[in-house]
Amino acid sequence: MAVEAGTQSINIEWAATTEVGAVTLLATQDYEHLFPKDFTLQLSEDGVIWETVASEQGFEAAVGANRWSFDGVTANRLRIDMTQFGMIAGQMIAMVAEVELEETPPDPQRLNLRWLAVGDDGASGVASSYEVRYSTSPIDESNFENAVLVNNTPVPKIAGSIETAQLLGLEAETLYHVALVVLDESGNTSGLSNVATATTRAAPPAQVQDLQMDNAEQNQLELVWTAPGSDGQVGQASTYDLRRSSQSITLANFESAEVVEDVFAPNAAGTEERFTVTGLNAGTRYYFALKTQDEDGNWSVLSNVLVSETAPGPDTVAPDAIQTLSASLPSGEVGISPVAISVSGAQFPDGQASNLLDSQIGTDWYTPARDSAQVEEVIIDLGAEVQLQEIVMTASSFFPELFPKDYDLEVSLDGVNYQTVASGNATGLQSNDLVSHVFAATQAQFIRLVVNESVSGSNGLYYVALAELDFVQSASNDGQALLTWVATGDDGAEGTASSYEIRYSTSPIDGSNWASAEPWLDTLPVPSPAGALETCTLFGLDSGVTTYFGVVAVDEDGNASPLSNVVSVEIP
Image 1 (cartoon, rainbow, N blue to C red):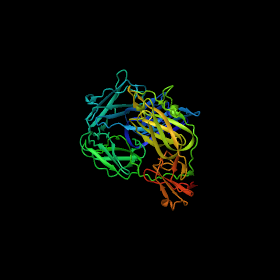
Image 2 (cartoon, rainbow, N blue to C red):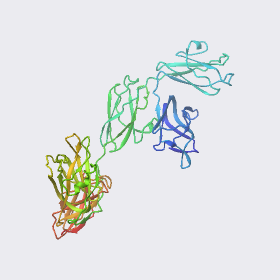
Image 3 (tube, one colour):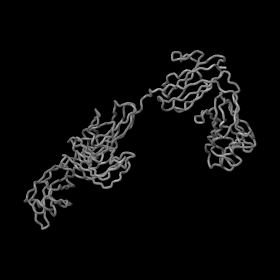
């Protein structure tokens, strides 16, 4: 909630009068500077007489909850009076995200007293002291001195002011009589006040403090808590009032939260209670809280508030259709000028990554000495898009034992989205041994060698040593087609799909004959996040004919996208 400078009060009212023992104001995230600076918190049960329970000057709000606690005040209204605000865009504004109220646990050994102050001389001035006494028997002037004297009575205020006091340590469910006299500074005593009577409460059920969720399904939640007693933690209570809401539950809105029906009667104090709430929506957040009532109608204070979510329902949102599919002929063998553009580390000056590309087996790429095995990598830019079908790695002349222990070879068209074309785990190599990885012809410009685990040298430190990294292009594009497209998502255009289905035919493809088109089952790319560039080279196609292609994306729950745009190319 937000108020401008012209509005100086926020008033909140709730249905049932209760004893409030704390107020929490939540500051709006990122706008803590707009929290009220000068303000008072006041409570009332009739809207006429207000009791101030907190007052702040120059207050600086903490992030999140700001809490004020006090002796319990019976009320069903809260008023926040503000006189100083924050400023934004030249305007004075106060902003509070949420207001929470906390009940004072009912005390069966306490009575609250309230009266209007009289004066020193009759109804004017300020008296000197009060003498308050109570008894389980009726009080009059003849036995007032025999009643129990109340200690720690308030210092009198100016005539007409509201005075309060508490009687503590009383017996539960007992009728008490209370009266007082007023003394001035000369020892003059007023006549006996009216005699007030009240009965202390029965001990209510204890607060449930461990309400929690034990099992979540799509449409139901199992709640668990420990049963309180009818008198605190003793005995057996009579009724539970369990509520649920899509918003946080507080003392102020508990009565308006939805009642959870058919909750069983409480078991004996200390019993583990379990109740399954049904009829919920899948993948939805719910708030739960409860109160407990005894056989005399006494209610506990509000339990802890449980925040829980049901299990998500089945995914029914399919990926969006791919609208960017294109088909072309892969490039034949072209001249390249490879350059190492990124490296995790290299020893200077003799171990640079450029040594991988110099066609000299006597020069190596050496990583710096590491204290432990770690990931190392080098990225090569070929300088042009080519169709690769083989990558050859040459072991070091001097340290063949430092050949990468576990590695992946990845290729990319754009230098951003890579696909793995080969992996290796070679050991026992000799100087200048060749390790070749042949794969389906793939269009690429960038190559990334990712060493997942470097090797320990004789000195106990970890390195990678590699002499050469060579690339073999596919010399012909006969019977081949290169497909490219922009990745769609998992749910519509968001996320990452699970797989692709590519089909082709020498006849035009549409939704009616998609299932009868030939599926491409080799070298399907693993989907990248939505928006990434995807490529796939198909080979072994019939030469001399026009071939049509389409792509469908599938998510992890089997939801398939609509058919992509259909493209064609004449296969050489």
